[in-house]
Length: 366
Image (cartoon, rainbow, N blue to C red):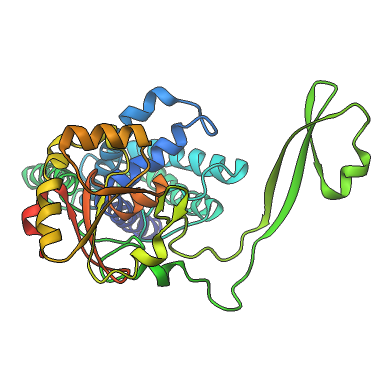
């Protein structure tokens, strides 16, 4: 019985680590955004780690996959199980912190393929921790499946393949797109809220400075605010989260007006998504104006989408001779549309027809 439980734990943990790792390795940039969220001021306040987020994301997801493979084949079982134990303790701490303090809404355990609430993520990690402890206690039962040479080859091949996949998706696109802006999806439909969908319950909270201390008061407590207290701020506290459409916070702002309704009705709309112009790839930006002219000849409406300031837009337009107009959109929405900076998206009346990394412009079909 002990051997059966151990081998089941081995199979369960190994497969789950491989699946979770491969999903994130398919989109390491997306996982790096999640790590950057953990490093941000409201969470752990480790801003010096933010520039390292992508490198750490790649290391962690490759480690997940490789450890899963090593566990399944029984390669260096003692080191493998110890590494899995350390990793799951770290993940369990992060998911508990996210859930208890409500700071990170989605841990990104399975990327965009499967969204888990913080408490669901924590529960998943507790289950994994339970099975990894079983493996730790019964390490001697985790035996190699092949001879030493084959074990070495399989371990090294898994590392090489993971590294190749990471480099590929960083320079092109995720192999599988799980995001709401994937090819074939319609943006307008993605923003719709179904009839009868649950609505959010929001409570207004007023913050007053009472004797030098910022104190929160709800609407029902307003009569109890002591004399001399000074108003500081007001915020909305979500009591119950209602239905959130897959696509939200999507705008096409210019001169304080939102043009998304008319632009998303264009039969031929080409968008250059450059969410951060100062840090965009220079070689990619240099290719955009030529494509802009080619697209206009074929009847396309061409625009840029960014979160950059008017000054940054003007600088980029001058430096790269860009003649198309830029529209403003939330940074998270633009990063969700496409990971490359810049990237190319073609829409037909709001339906996404093509998405390309700037390295693959030659594959664009106008």
